[in-house]
Amino acid sequence: MGYRISLTIEELGELSASITKGKPKEEAAEELADLLILILGHSLAMSVEPGK
Image (cartoon, rainbow, N blue to C red; front, side):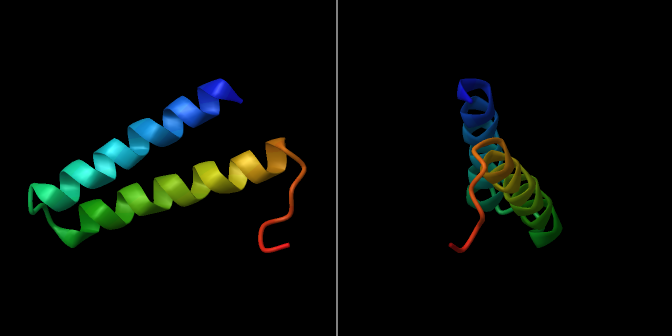
């Protein structure tokens, strides 16, 4: 699980950089999608249903 958390932190950093550097919204959207995929993966790995 620690590795997954590290990946999430890395993706969050990429999202932060894309926003603070004023890059196109499409780049931020891609980073948000990456985070969503990782978080859904976390819930599967932990046998937790999102939203419950």
